[in-house]
Length: 296
Length: 243
Image (cartoon, rainbow over all chains, first blue to last red; front, side, top):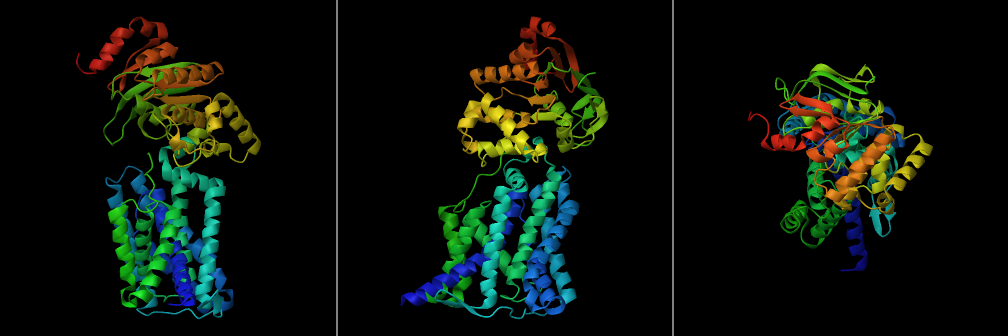
């Protein structure tokens, strides 16, 4: 084994890990804020993929591909706010008996609905977004231009997300809401509005991930299923509710998949992550960075 | 004009089941008004309704003459009412200072005012200044309670709804909390307080209401209650409905 190829495998694993991270962060963010699992997260990702595909192939062309990310984020952000307001809010209003069941039913319904709508609109075809960036080198690793841009884009989006959460009033309120819903209301914050914003940001991040990854993977009705599966794997490994945990777990998963495929067998690529997940569940059931649930 | 006036209020958690069954009371300006009574009498329910957490099925809640029974907690907070729930109501993963900043939410654009109230708060509670960078979840029970109180009072409210300020605290810290509330009252804050600790509630309140089964069983000046405190405690321990 020579060092150069080992470095390449590690790097390519980390690149995949960073790409997984955005989806995982969006899932864990929604879970942390609203204490629900959003089973339709992958479909918001899929919407992001289609937005990017349509923009690049029909509307603005490949030169302005970067536009797809904010457009997908904003559209899905607004859409998510609406969904939160009209479909999910009743569960916070004392009208639903079992909150987790309510959310599960609603979000699984949305998943089925969006997938089938995508089939009706786009047909059962897989689309590919044309390359918009030439292949390049990441250290010793030759990398496709689109994958490189997905990497850079993810890092930038996570950076902006971190800044918003740590340095702005809205981010402070969102952090507070994930820890103590009563405390947010006694501070005079409109918690319903904040719920809408939280859900909107969560699904918007998934859509941004979709827009970034549209040219890396294929675009079709079930684009979202693999990222969702990986996302859930990652957030359980990292610890539910922990954003740093999900980023580190995403990198680990990327590494394990990459090194496992090279040194064991690429046939079992998806298996390695699940073996790792089972080990984590056995030895650290709260995940690597599991945080305590909020008080109220 | 009374600060808070509750008239014929019917409130509950479920439709058709009223915990408060036509409750009327007042919190007089610049005074501490105490509410005592057995478990389940509706004491905390009243405070939750006054802060907009529960919607009135019937009746009204007037604050300075304005009906607030249909308003959200956020709107009520802006009117100058603060609600201090039972126990620690902090954000455990955030540092003490961030907790206080979130308390300043309704005037978050006014940087000067934030600076000023933080300074005032640190002056009142030196321990919060010392631990301003520490996560709130790591504070002791007494410190966490002080943070919870300070966080709601940074907005300089004119009315504070205080639920069970002594619950889970040592007698020494309970004394401290009540002394602090009395000092705030002397500075003009109107306080409506609910406490299981009848002795403390009677000691510090100028006027008291005793609840039973969602109605006012007895009300009066402090001296009325102070004379019969043993009987009141006995009754409330035995609970409602045994007569």
